[in-house]
Length: 235
Ligand code: AP5
Image 1 (cartoon, rainbow, N blue to C red):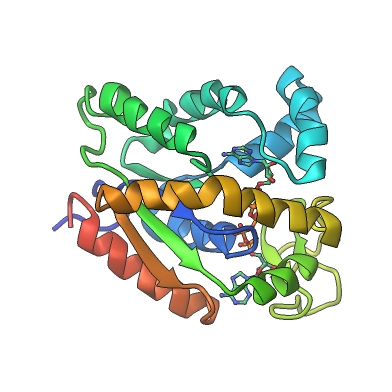
Image 2 (cartoon, rainbow, N blue to C red):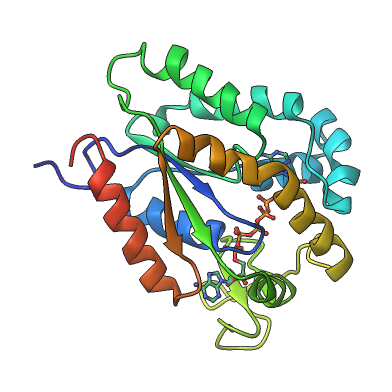
């Protein structure tokens, strides 16, 4: 059997409310299987930072905690999925998060992925990370991120060794501007009204698995790796 860093893994979709640990787990999966993490939140934040037209349209919407309109996401995601590093598989972190985005993604897989040789020939495994509402607030208000390497910390739950500095490269950690309590509530509401139906959509298709996200990070990863191994085309 081929090694897990050379065989096909296929598409992995991570679902879960803001603060569930999608970014934390996506980075660990990416490292373990040597496949890219594709976070629509990170891609949009890069557009905002670089002052692109898309960034200008998304900036205020993201600052309020609302979802960016579906049609603004599609070209950005399609372009990223066509890059060569996606050929063995990839992790979608934060996409799809509306029923329309899920339908778009299925159509994309049908036409773009399955038609091409050497691409992972399987439907995505959809992994939902479940966490209680009150813990989400603690996780989001305590989150700090390294602006250089992207490592994620939590001042309450996973603090850096030196206050406010990244363990890996010593950079000063930053707080995301949508991690304010009023904005967090909006984001959680957007998840309830618009993203829960996405989980139902995949459950109806028999593609949804859930993991207990309340456990320590490494135990959540173990559950996720088991599910991926069960599903991966080359396993
Ligand atoms: P996005 O960047 O995707 O944010 P999100 O979905 O709100 O998710 P987060 O990044 O806040 O949380 P996470 O689940 O990744 O948790 P993390 O691992 O950091 O989206 C931002 C915005 O962009 C949206 O509001 C929207 O406007 C727009 N957008 C993005 N995609 C879109 C789309 N598809 N359509 C429309 N609009 C879109 O962990 C959180 C904290 O918990 C950290 O401090 C971490 O250290 C800690 N933690 C993690 N795991 C554990 C654990 N097991 N135990 C204890 N602590 C833990």
